[in-house]
Length: 441
Image (cartoon, rainbow, N blue to C red; front, side, top):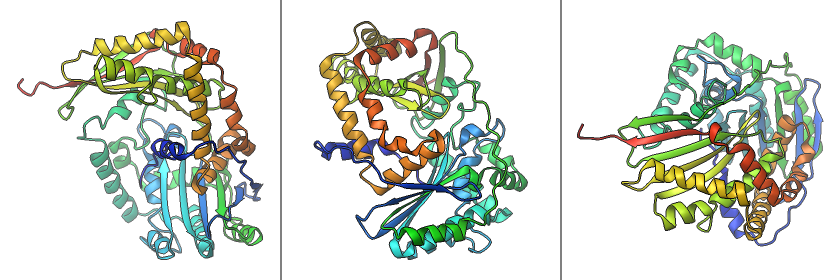
């Protein structure tokens, strides 16, 4: 299924916002006897409804040699169930005037249906069927093995810089279960047995390992009845045993050089291990990334792209995860530019923040942008339901959806300077260099 890429959408939405303030999201939360967390959100904007089912299973819960299972199930869950024949799930939803999708990340797998309000029962029934009665047989497994291999080929292998994510995470989180991408390794899926896939579904696709959020133009009483009717009889299972995600202590910088025939220009990637998204420092690190690379007035763009023309593009970004985090820089170099020139410019800009901090003008600009961007993330029903589910399942406090903006607003200039010094240390730097191969050699 398609990956969700939120940042460009949020930035487009944010650009259209003026001074809209964040409006708290009303919701009702309860649990079924089998442990399924249910959240209801009434939104009368349109006669539609959306179901969003979040499972706490991602690639970090896998083991070496059996990677890619979470992503594989993102596909397999659309095959068929005991009561829905193979290939019918997509057709049932689209025939009802709805849309559907799913995604997998390092920490979670999620599924959604968006339908006209009079088709909500259909969506709930299908989702319950996939949880309780998913058919895992040789035909479905072999079909999806081919799909995953084709996705690897089309999206990652043989494309310029298609392996950046793989090499970035492998280098940054070396020795931990964050070192492989959610799509996994092809041979792991190829060699897995049907029994292993069935065991995986039975371990993680449980009501007590999931959060169901239903939103839209709801009749709340009727919606609760349908949820009880379709999900209430699904048995819970043992709480999945979580792997201890330990990032080995890094004592010196690491550098990896990648040679691929499809690389058109050199690429320089630099990263540092930071903190998970629950840590208050994650908010200050977002501010730091914005100061360094958001827009043409940012420090990196002005220095690396505009004035010195070392690269055709340069950016920094944070990746806060469930058990760790990353701060990274990526630059696509201009022809003839040496890696040391770009690395030196980035190091210089980091050192300036570490020594002098950021200006009041930069701080206020980023602060305002964060408030606008955060508000934009709650304009859609989709955005609200996702935030509700993640706050409940991963943070254990759904009320945080209405409190998180305050965590951005308490960040100070001193915090930005402090996190730059704390996490962007030379001895903890990881570097990936994509070199252009000599076609004549």
